[in-house]
Length: 389
Image (cartoon, rainbow, N blue to C red):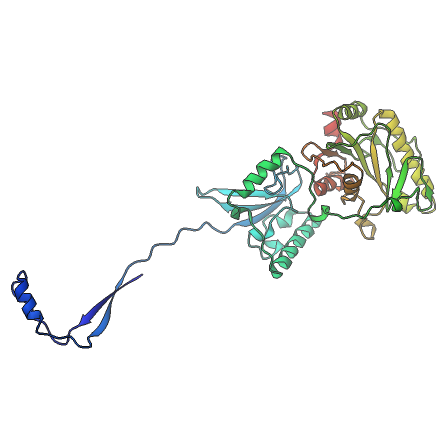
């Protein structure tokens, strides 16, 4: 910082009086000189500039599977279920502690922290290959948006706005669609059929695209609370070696009572089940359709509770074909129900949940159910936890 003073340069020395307290002498001596075109020069003095405020170290990103269901997403305020992929921004607070703000993958503001590649994210190598690909795609989308001049607001720049949003979300968390879940499906009555390809459907059952659904069970009421279930291995014990409407049994003795209690509490009970045999058995498609629908009809009669049912007949990614938009873990069946089969009632995601046996555990056949719950934003339970505990 510079301080500048302007002074006059005198053409010759000036002899000041011995007694400067005498204004008369000083005035008389000073009047002898005339200053014409005086030269100027600048006197500089240097001061030490103030130190800039100490900045916290740059934040970094960490990815891991949730160790419990106690954490919540900082964007949507929904709970992050146990073993679900969560992505966090780690920053150092003023006290010297690391603070982590966790997010769902679809909610994570990638632009909030500088990341040059997915490999730079702590914990990336420990993720499953499918989750690694999803995380890499998120970074690519962020790069594209930055290139297009879009600006994303980070969590640390909201000046408390995000805290207000979180409080409002906790009061009434309604179903919202984001990321992959934002699936716009053109549904029309003219597209609904009484047959699935060459197979005839039983009364009350209809087909749309690659799904078969129970149109309206007697006593079923639409609701803002959804209790959703997988069928095989969750509600009913079945076997791929046995075919037929009667080739099943209750998975747990408590299933009828549990479902009845939910119905009495105002829940709408919905089954979301995959059945690729209907598509795979081209020469025996009618047998596959009758077997699946027959089991579901008999199950509903057994538990004596009205239910809504959606059957996804398409293939998954592992079959070598393009993944069907309605087959779990894709959220297509949920969004058909939410947008077209719930009377326009907004779903309270805080009270709704999903129960399924495909949770990606060591002996599970897949992780389709837990991934389905994550894609939709539902709380997830395994059947032995929900029906036995």
